[in-house]
Amino acid sequence: MCSEKTIFMDYDGTIHDWDGVFKRSLNGVLGLSGEEFFDIWTYRIHRGIIHEEYLDKHDNIEFHCQLLFEYLGESYDEQISRNIIELLQEAQEKAKTMPDFFPDAIQTLRELNENGYTLCLSTGTGVELKAESMKKMFGKNFFSFLFSEPLLGYLKTEPDYYLNALQRVNVKPYEAISVGDTPLSDILPAKMVNMRAIWLNRRGEKWPRDLRVKPDFTVNNLLEIISLLSK
Figure 1 (cartoon, rainbow, N blue to C red):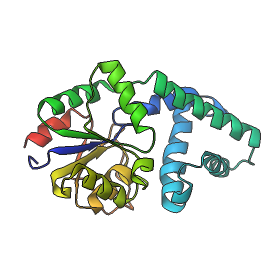
Figure 2 (figure 1 turned 180 degrees about the horizontal axis):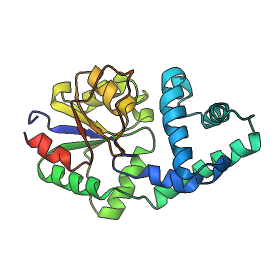
Figure 3 (figure 1 turned 30 degrees about the horizontal axis):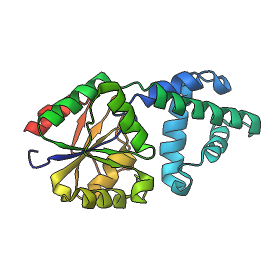
Figure 4 (figure 1 turned 30 degrees about the vertical axis):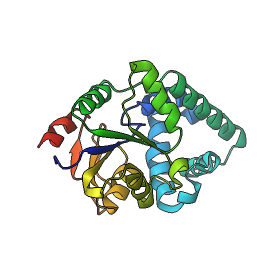
């Protein structure tokens, strides 16, 4: 894999432990534990129903709430929905002001920098704030390029997100690799434009059965990609 010298690195779930922030903030809502709420919201609602059927409502949190009540078999409650939205906003603010980074992620970024890789932070929204929070905490700017959906004009689930980013970095698809924890935004669209892709599977999940495209490699923590890239 030595031909790839440019790495597109996801943020939430890959570098930053957004999952932990989410679970602590939503614990107890609708009688669910934080783990249960996270699993339903993220995997059943967002990555399942929204990514499969309603990509145009990707960022519509109220619609997510409607689907949540439907999934649970309960009548929609507008007040509880507003409370969920407020708790999510508070969680996002906590993630900005008190970010919780995976230890293996920071060590990996440092080694990749030292080994001469060009790092691109690729995320949905708030990419500047995310990069700045890392710079403040670690005193170093790890990334040469910052990419987000508003900047590129495409959702991260769309192949054009990566095509546009590749053009801005001025590299060919075979010269870059995407690393992330979400199959539908970090792996599938990157593979569709002929990039290589590494799936970070921290939770030991199974690859979605309906996705025919598969990652080139699967790792359990980011440090594993150091040895992969050296082969």
